[in-house]
Length: 157
View 1 (cartoon, rainbow, N blue to C red):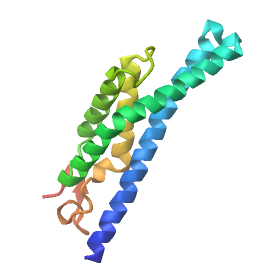
View 2: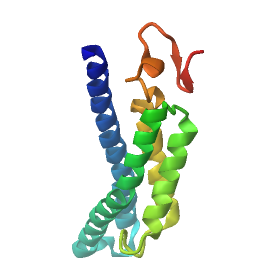
View 3: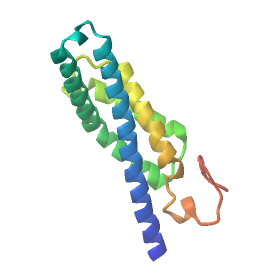
View 4: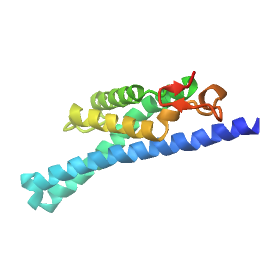
């Protein structure tokens, strides 16, 4: 029983770490994009304009994270419960969360474009899969039994 509890706690740590790193990666993409826009902008010579781009990036990050977090939590719970390990599942979840975050009224600024939202969602999905998704379900006997080889697509048969 304690081994099973240890696996669950271990997965909880890995999943949380994966979500945080995926959020950091997508946040970095947004900030880099808005930083590039601020640098290439005609208004970049004015400090107030550059500051407004930074404020817009922070607002965008908070809006996207808030709008996509419920989707990611459900996706992670389903992935862990059913040991879904396919990269496509996490990329699709990222794309859906990014697209929905872009169209939720008030979640992101009006200047937000769908392409950037999709890119951040896809990046988050890829990073999460690399850290935690490819071993989803490893807490259960079927998904992560010691000594049983496992592939990113699921446990070996």
